[in-house]
Image (cartoon, rainbow, N blue to C red; front, side, top):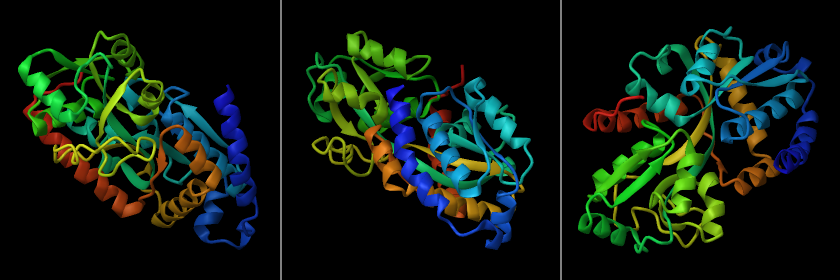
Length: 331
């Protein structure tokens, strides 16, 4: 409750700034269209997580900008696919938007060949929103204090090092498989139904290792309940400046982050998509929004339109051969 109260307070400044925008009656055709009716922001995962937080920031900003209600719809189920298919079927006016994590756009199309949507065929990429570093961390009882020591330990004692993930085919599961491939580590995957149960077992010592995103593991690293060995981002994380990247630790080719973006139904007019991208850039560039996300271990990360679409295609091409080579199947 305190977190949501703080979020509302932090967003107040952003909302006030947006209310000072020029009268929309004098704006572009795209602005007038967007101001014509209410918005539905579909978050295909439960309240309380990063998708929900980002959706509410977006909804608050659009409400202030266009003087129209913007309601967050937590349409959960089927690994996010229920909410995604809802947006696929929505009218392409720019008033129904999807806030979604990378896995649903770059992993599931290969992992789940019978999906009820295709990314390129059913959606228009609007903008990325934020990203969070992934962290390789171990229970402090594990003697390895560096990535090199972890790899050596796993080879010296085969099957002794396992890592927790929030599920088969999740981006964190595949990050672990890519780490194993690139480092030569002999590690085992243990899948859980969500980050929480797996994290609890690592904290309790049942599983020695986790690859988790920053918002989930940072409090436990700061408290000393986990030891961070490396981040998988290309650059060191501001939250953990003393923790090396995997590349610095000698493991190349695992420069990956957890990220989130906005999609609109296919057929949404290009000027409307472009205007939404500009609105998102304004909303997420507010200092209060940046500060709130940083406190939760996320950073604002904006890539829009065709560049965002190309990012999705490139990352899909990274995951597809790993899924096929490891014969990973959705459960």
